Length: 453
Image (cartoon, helix red, strand yellow):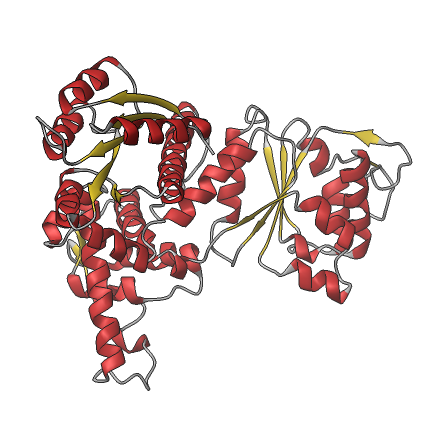
């Protein structure tokens, strides 16, 4: 876990020294301040990622110090230390900008958990910031990966970490989730970005044609082979070969692919000359390869060679918090492409889009929105422009039942939270104010609905 630069603001010397010694023993860099005035001077003259701030101190109290710290540097995370029985003061501090609180006497294990969470969150934010900067330097991808959900943030972060390696990567996910887009992102972030990424759909060609497509052939290798042809491996030399629908490979081609992964060499059809190329393999499948291994239709040794790193793209129905920004993005995109003045959706149309499960995932969403933009008669897309109506819900659903009512209320609550977080650019303090609830309650709701880690 990443180590933090921590400032302890505590007027009790014994408590301060105990916390200092413990955190230093865990590898963190620790500074101290005995009161609020000293803390502010220390913050002005140093760099801190986390501040442990006692709420009750002589002179400036914790709330005053917190406000001044946030004015100086709003990026600093602050955890309030408060006496048991004065939780309401901690809640007030959280409204001002503290990320959490811990009660006295401080449980060191609990403190360590909180510090680790801060470190993990800051590391993820920093890595994703660097990743976005790297993406902005390039001019490749035809389409950006649009996301907001924590699960996608983790996945994109992993893509940035593995891109520089030579490891083979297996991308798993349902059809339409964006496996090729993720493969292109990995290639774009890798040292191979100056070379090509070559895409082969292993399920689109017959076995004999696919073998020639991948490895090439010599003149006369088979009927119709009028001249030598280099294959996709040679085309991808120095770059990346993306093998989509890898579960469709025949046993013969599986053997040849395994040989390449083991020996980094192959032969063209009709030749006994070994060829060597520098190619990074990224493969993808919507099948369960482990089941295929058990059934004997996919080689176990090849399976493990392909999945040095495994990345699983979640279906759209499991990352509904991405839906709103995806909808807005594609409506704007298709409006520009088709010269349409589309301002957005009616409330009823948006509600339908948010409730639908998208068995075809992002690909289906894109198709629905492109069609809607093209056929829309007005500036706003209506339910008449969508290929489904409210009756796409199961016929036996009893909308008057208590469970259905509860689900409707929870869906409404979730949508309100998402809208508030979007309006405040994920500022939980401001979002909680808009919703009229405490920030701690907001964090609970975010976790409940899977909107945050």
